[in-house]
Length: 113
Image (tube, rainbow, N blue to C red; front, side, top):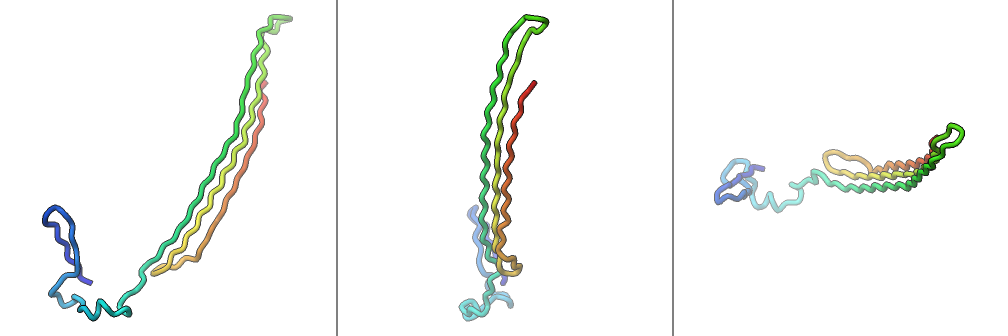
């Protein structure tokens, strides 16, 4: 379908180019058989992240028997992540609906010297 663009007045306007051999008639534009669904997209996405962390440190100055300081610490960390995606595309390219899902959870506990 031939298209013409008009940039006068500082705005973009466009429409069907008139007077060309390839310009469709009104009857051709009103006939549903002349239209094709070129593409249809549907998508969904979800991402969730979570982290719980705790840290504490203690230091005690002690000067006995060659020991000057006692240090104690505790670390805790738990994190998780979830990702879901989906897509449906119809038209010139067709892909079935797919929803890969990934869930990951990690925990760690560290006790420093």
